[in-house]
Length: 145
Ligand SMILES: [Zn+2]
Ligand SMILES: [Zn+2]
Image 1 (cartoon, rainbow, N blue to C red):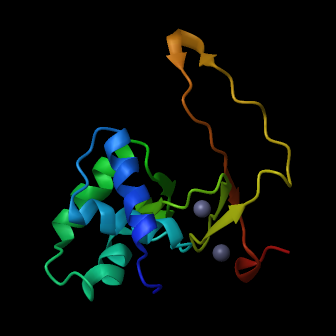
Image 2: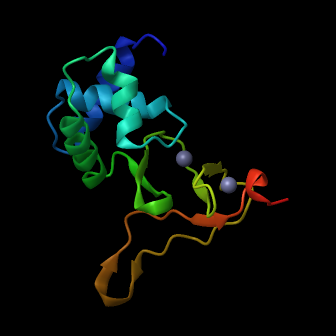
């Protein structure tokens, strides 16, 4: 893992405060780790990654922190196979393709395939704040082409 750098830490603290969250150690550490983690990790993987640096970080804190980061839109949820929560905290704008067989998650650059424009509103007064596309795919390993 790269050395945490101070600037990034400050940016992350600022991000947290912008959405009204206090910049606790666990929130900063998890958000910082997710910003560069391209694996679309589960909560367990996040815990495993941070355990060395933060031995006192408990699994329940990781779950609770991920919940609040999701709730405030700082990270995204990716549906995994068997309903297992996987998250994405990279700041890059991208879509996902999930293999229906092995559950692997692939990043899709939205500039490669045309995406429909994001509507401002849907029926029943639903205001759109974000849009992402998730493709269901069969990956190469699982018999795709
Ligand atoms: Zn697969
Ligand atoms: Zn992703």
